Length: 411
Image 1 (cartoon, rainbow, N blue to C red):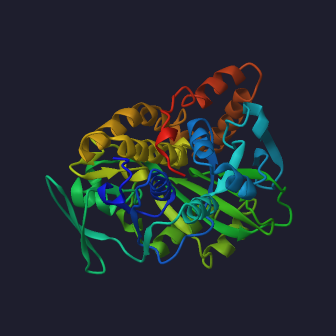
Image 2: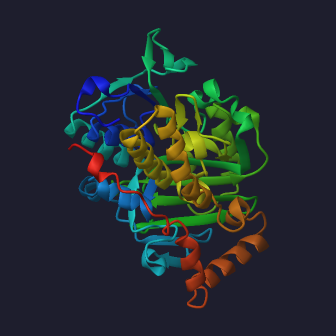
């Protein structure tokens, strides 16, 4: 599909202006294919939690020429430590303990900053048809293409529609069916938002504290030393009342942190006015196929593993690289490009979606005994005896070999 005449290029729509959507648009643009991107938000979303680059996702960032921009925004995060209710250190795990492959990786960057690096690269490469405040409301397909209706009322025809619109993908719902068919609830919820940095917080370290009642929370360094990110994990039964109900979400956090300890009051004081408050269920998305006709899913929309895996950004970047590469090099039909993308991506996703041992239950013990047992286990994992075993577990996706599409880029 990478012909010299622009008129022969496929018309491609990307739904979702997040990391996966912008990465696939960038790679397509560099292959001479100018996509249209629609994003429901009115503007790029700044901030967000820290995400990391490791293994194949770092290789993708290198091949896409993103590393200089990433280095400018890279967080100075040096490891993770656990503290007690008084803020006293219980256990410290420097990033180099697991060669930058542990909970804190060698390269950490906020989601918003990584997305801005991609947006800057898109602009430098010539830009795409980017539409904020717009989203898909209907898709009708035939053998030759897909007619898409937008929230604005406009209707356009595309050769390929890429759904990169997240865990609760509207594209997936419209084409593949209700979300409940493909979602596995993983036992809890996670929240992120910005808080002022407490005076006693050690700079550059991700500090975590466990509460009785299956709740864990922490404070993670931000690009601005004056602020940090609250990270809260709560384990419990699924509650449909929490979906899109910010008041109920905040109340759950208040209830869980009410027992106090460490910086719980700091977090609760900042929560109600945090402009970047995020809360969602921890869930895995699994579909028998990521494409249907001319529509294909990318990133969390197709294969979310939840933040518990630590591989969400990796799957988005690797998936975007493969999808763009297959579209640009397809010698036959668009559908065949989508099938080839899935064949190449499935082995990586199968490994990247694996949860750490014990899943959320291990991360959020319910009792004091469970908390102490978890701390003892963490010390054991950090010991010289267990370090080789941990390194093998943490390197599980690094054996994946990326195909080389560099010959297909045009700039």
